[in-house]
Amino acid sequence: MYSVCTGKLVYVQVSKLVYVQENVPENLEIKKKVFQQLDELASEKTILASSTSCLVPSKFTAGLKHSSQCIVAHPINPPYYVPLVELMPAPYTSADVIQRAKAIHIECGQQPVVFRKEIEGFGINRLQYALLNECLRLVQDDVMSVEDIDKVMSYGLGHRYAFMGPLQTALLNAEGLPNYCDRYGETIVRVSETYGPTPTWKADDPVIQEVQRQFDAVGLGVDQLPARRAWRDENLARLAKLKQE
Image (spheres, rainbow, N blue to C red):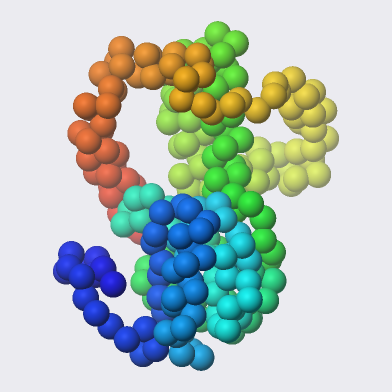
């Protein structure tokens, strides 16, 4: 087992642990094998959690002896500055395991959200993919530059979403949600119906190549990404401190 604290491999008895977090690659067959191994080692009190970002837990925990103790606990990158954790139970996960997993993450300073049932992609990726798909459509249709599309979020929506979600944002933009619908409902439907098909998201797709070309042109090529990640983390740390205050 790898220790984040020491950066070394350590050997522990899984049966003595109250919580195990699996972090193997996003590969269904690998996760099945790992959970089968953990299932043989776990005690009746061990929570077996997966960091998967899209796979629902029943796909790799069904039929295990300790299946009721299995759950998804999806942290958001980078987890040391972004506190959200998505907790998704399988249909057979016990309510006690859900509550204990939630309590553990709260104790660690995280902000867990609990799903009532399984859904592919969970919450953050379903919302993120909707945004990314529309970003590609705007580039593909030559509506906006990549730089300006990102500004829409970083200088617009992102300012509000850093402190409140889209539903509360809508609530505060009107006198309650029914009033918001009266004001903007028809517009939302009309604009939504103009969305095109889902992009392919293949590396050789011309729109992907165009997005990368625009990033390269402003100094965000592959070689510059480590420095940009450091800049991102510094700003996320400052935001995290501000939100704590």
